[in-house]
Every structure is written in C-alpha cells, then in structure tokens.
Image (cartoon, one colour):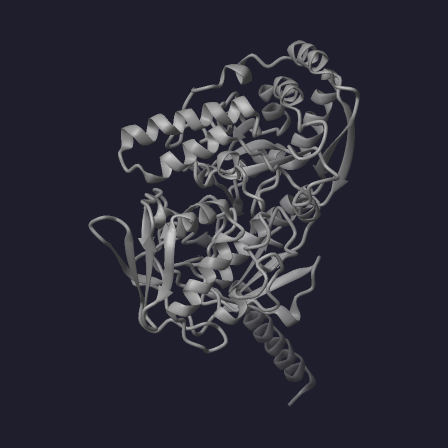
Length: 521
C-alpha cells in the first residue's frame, strides 16, 4: 500500500470512529437541573432535584396524568369496599427491583409507612388507617377506622416527598436519614459508583423495568426509555446553562434563566415550554413560626403586609404572558380550587401598612434571617426582592446566601432562620391535605411548625367528605384560615419553563422534567 493510500485509509478509519462516536453521543441526553443533586432519597428532602431523581430511579403505585387524573402505575388495580373503609391493592405481574429481587406487597407496605412519616398528606392518611398489611406477595390491604376520601390521591402524590416504592430492607430504615442505596423499580439505573457530586450524575436504562402498555401521559402510562444514558450535568451559573444549551453542549435545562427566555424563544434550535396554570410555580415564603420574631402573629401580619407581589414577579424577568401579577389563592391561580376567599390582607399589602402593623406588634428589632438561594434561577431574584421589601418595612434583615440544596436542608431545623423563599409546583397545591400551606399544620416534619387548632378541624372535615360542593366550601375556609394565621405568604405565580433542543422528540409535558419516551431526530 502506498503512503497516500495509508493516509486515506487512516482518514477513513478516523471518520468512521468519529461517526460511531457521534451516533453514540446522540443517544446521551445531557440535562442541567436548577438545583444540584446532592440527596438521593426523595423521602428525606423536598428539593426538586430529588424529585427528578425519584422518577428516574423509582416507581410509584399510582401515577398522575397530565390532566391531574390518577391511574394505576405499579398497581394492576385497586378495589374499594362499599363503605369506603377497605382498599385492596393488586400489583402488576413481573415487577422487579434493580437488584433483581421481586417487588412484593411487603415492600409496598414498608415504603408507604416510611413515606407517611415524612409527608403531611401521608401522615393525614395514616391517622385514618387501622391496619395496613400484606395479604400475599401481590396483594395488600388498607383498613380505615374512619373515612378518608383521598387515599388514591395520597398514594399518587407527585411531591413534595414522593411515595416511591423501595425494598422493605431499605424502607424499614430511619425515615429521617437517606437510605444508603438507590434501589428502585423505575425506568433508569443510577450509576452511583461513577457519581461525581458537583460534576455529573449518570443514569442508564434499567433492564429489569417493565413499562406499562399505555402511551405515556404525565407520570402515568408507559415509561419507555429510548436513550442510552441521561447525564445530569452540574452547571451552577444560570447564564452558562443557557449558553451551553444554545451551543448544543447540553440538551435540556430544567428552568430557563428567567431574563433569558425571550432570547431562547427566538432561537429556532430551542423549544421553550409554556406551562399552564397547574404546571406553573407559586412563589411563597416559608415562615418559621417556632422562633422569634415570627412566633408572634402580629409580627407575621406585618410580614404579610410587606410582601408586594408585583415587584417580585417583575424581578424574575419573565415575559408578560408567563406571569400572574397577583395571586392570592393557596391553590394557585388558573387551577382547580382557585379562590379569592380570605385574600383581602394580601390585596391591601403596602410598605406603609407593614410599617404600621410592625409598630403595633411591639417588634423590638430582632434579627430576621432570610435564606437566599444564590444558585436557583427562580429563588435568587425572589430572595433579593423579599429582603429589600422587609428592610423597607422596618425589619432588621440579615441575608444568608446558600446553594439551594443546603438551604433546603437547613430549613428543616427549627432555629437559625426566619424566612425561606421557596417555589412550589401547582400540582402540589390542588388538595389542601397535600398543600404545604395547610397540610403542614401541627406536623412535626413540616418546616415552619405552624399549628392552628381551627385548621386541624377543617382538614379533618375535608378529609372525610366526598361531596364536591362541601369540599369547595371547606377548601375556601381552609384558605381563609391559612391567611389569617399567616402559615406561609404567597409571593406570586409564574411559569418557569424548561427549554430543550428542538431535535428532541417525544418530550412528555409535565410540571417537572421526565426523561422517558425521548428520542433525537
């Protein structure tokens, strides 16, 4: 072979290798979340990266579809007795965990019990449960000592803590500490040994996963994986995330930098989502009722008056069609359950009114520690505006800037903070027994530690009624009570759209990213 032919052969081989590598790379989905993946247990944390992790690695008994309906997922079916006090659940055939062990009813019972220790909705359900036990490997039964109208909704809960199924040997461990292994029956395997926190977390298809036969619809239906790997890539800087998306270095960003949405919309290679009401975010202030000064209702009322929603939603920098200038409903606006009941105090908020209420409260200048999440596209601007509004009203504000994961963990402690801006998906607000603004009432694991006897009674009454008109009436009363006690403070509602490369097909629209059914053109 002549030298020229050797060179040509070498060039051809290099091109072939490059082509194979390019094809392999086409099957890798590179994603940047808005918060760093740090905790691998969706029961012990409320951070959104753990929820995304949950739906990669684990599966749930029941899944919510895109319309808010609840469908069997790991379950084949459920049956409810005529008196609605006995629920019998049947698992699908062939379910396995990623370690090769079969999924049994014993695993499901242990997983439900663990989850209910950490999640107010689950805790409310278990208060009505007299017995939860396996019948055989595929069947388990729940007996109630009194009616609870939302068993199916509870087991289909998509957050804040997700009722994932895990092996009983793990589910029986301390519910307050992360499990040491990520063993699930979901569509992906987590490559835990290769995980580099702060760099990349990789997931590959779970060969033991058995998807349902129905088309994918939200968190329901068939979760068929069509990529070879999903990489969650750590990119702390928001603008860098958007630049990497435009350059094709990553395929998806969970939340587009809010002041960058217009630019991304103008790029034909990028698709920007447009979440509807139920999929939008409600910004809110988690207020620490356990520690001064907000253990005093009068001071909380001054705080409530200081929060001016139009300033906050303007600061996030979104186009006008993605924001709601004012929302007073704890159930979100343009969503099921939206209501004006009890919103007068929010509508009349002003700096002057806040100053007057603060003076009347006897506030003595105690420090108000605001946790500011500097790495979150949503929470960063909200925290800065909230701090400025509180200072204008006369509060002695101290800002602590933290990454989102650390902030979320620190707010589980009763001391050391006063106000934490958070955002919550609309899907988490629909039901008052699941809504953190009401459901955390007198629940020890719910940060904020508000406890209102009136709310306790209302929630119990709501839990037993299945009459829509009565549910609506009680939901309004719950909202009035939440605002009267200043459980949380609503800071505004807005869409926080994901953005992805236009060559991705099969994207399943939902309130947070899911990565099944996706291929690349």
